[in-house]
Amino acid sequence: MNALANRAESAINEMAAILAAYPAPDKWSPEQRAQAVSFASLLDTAQQLIIKKRIGGINYESEKKTFLENAGRTQSRHTQTAYGYALGRLDEWAGRQKINVLELTPAQADDFVYSLKGERSASSVRLDVSAASSFYTWLERRHEGVKNPFRGTRARPAKKIDVDIVIPSPGEIEIIINELPPDLAAAVAIMGYRGLRVGILPGLSISGSKFSGFSKGKDVSGALPSAALEAVKKANLPLRGPFAGQLANTLAKKIARAIEKLYKDGKVQGRYSVHDFRHAYSINEYRKDRDLYRVSKLLGHASIQVTESYLRGLGEVD
Image (cartoon, rainbow, N blue to C red):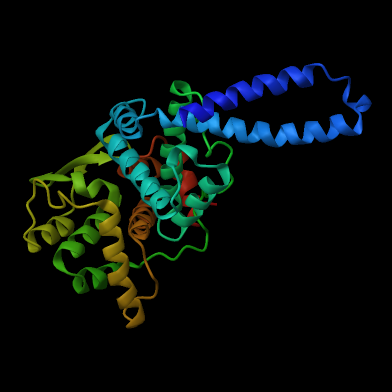
């Protein structure tokens, strides 16, 4: 490969010298025009060989490890973990497609994003795209020949919540908790009765009635409602790490499959996902007193403007 790449570089220099001696394009002879077309094809091939040579010298796993160790502005453990899972999904997809990740084209990047849409929520897909795009931008700064194929993609889901989203009622949440296996029921109780994201569960720790963990790159803590705490105890899960060793995505899929069965059996009205329990919690809390500030603090939003936009997407705020 190196010998071919070196020959390609020499060929490019030779073609450039020939073209430099040409007159203006509008004065080219038919022979010169044909030669220019041939050169264009050869140049493309030569450039591809040079790129392959440069990419071939990159230790991908080592570069990915270094990137993940420094991922995110805050270098939080949650961000590093989330980015690691995102790049793992990209590696797995590229492997199935027999594509070298370092040679990913914009069209292939879009295809990867489209493949995620049927499996993950819009916000999760956006996070995966952000992680992959950040990684490629980082590689661009370190290695000539690598380009960010996610830059400018239109495949990324829009940052909004569908207004026709179906939310489980308090009664349905109770039915789901009673019907699911104890460990999954505990997860639903925590999400439905306290509004925590599924992403916090693997690192969740409970002490007394208090919980702590990481969500969206931030430390999160607060009080856990008694109904949620009782569900964890009923499942005989260790309070210090009730979901330790499990992946958030795996928990989400298990819960979705269990609820799908309940839906088919006519026990609930919707095919609810883990995100719907946070939505339900948000709506129920807001309806108590219409206090955006209080709900914003409960949800861990950066501002009440974020909460207002979030609830508007759920049809609760005009």
